[in-house]
Length: 120
Image (cartoon, rainbow, N blue to C red):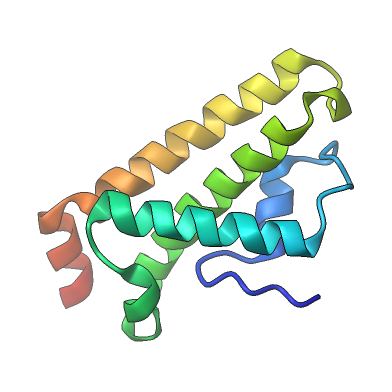
């Protein structure tokens, strides 16, 4: 099955999930999680980035990629902590990803930042 996500690639997501992610995670599952992540990002920022994606500049696409790949990687890590060396390893990875996700969502939601990026 081909990757269908708009904001992030499977490779970006799996790199962030780490080398110990559960290999039961299929492309179909990643696609479903990408839809959830993209919908969450659109809802949280009160802007439909999915529909506007083709016309966005590379900076905005990079922030969307960071947000979506971080969120989907969090879902993948949470799916099975047992595949990691320890629960603490998985939790530490989630903390780092969550910080990046929150930063990206904050940037996308801030109208001044959004206007700046759209005018760039």
